[in-house]
Length: 214
Picture 1 (tube, rainbow, N blue to C red):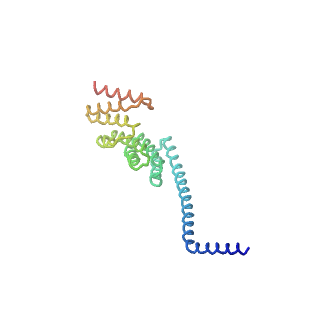
Picture 2: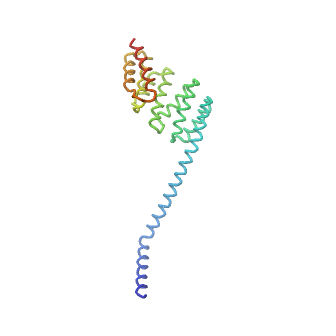
Picture 3: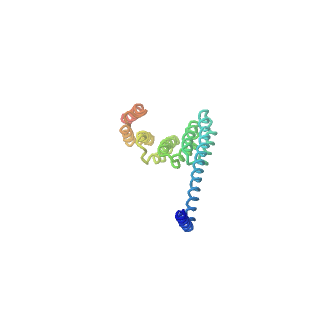
């Protein structure tokens, strides 16, 4: 037993010496890990809370859009952009509110929401959609050059045909019929087989192209 006691005491002495040398470092690491864990959990909660609040506001925008309440849609979208700009809800609300403003003939507010969604929104696909709609609003407002500039950067493949089609509309409105024909032909070439609405879009663009050629 004495041998075991001596060995045990020696191990305890070694442990004390090791702890004296490294104990503070081990404690610091443990505390840092605990803080990081709590911080991560807090961040997760914050993110979830942000998404829930943004989702509630977006639901309000949807309701306003259904009833045609452009003022409410505009105000709620402003709150989303102001407080939850980093969420997809803000970008989607800007697109939805812009449609309501456009339907009410409020091109300025429609343009403002689309401009934000096309440049500040996080989702690239939604940015492309916003650019396409912004160009259409600018065309409606008679701002042809700005509309063309909005379409300059190439969109993702699914929207290439619609971008080219709208570019053709703008060029035709400017009296640049040769360039408009080229844009419409590019739209036809870009329409994918089997894509949603492909047959309808192809027919619409074909009619525009034939009208210019005739």
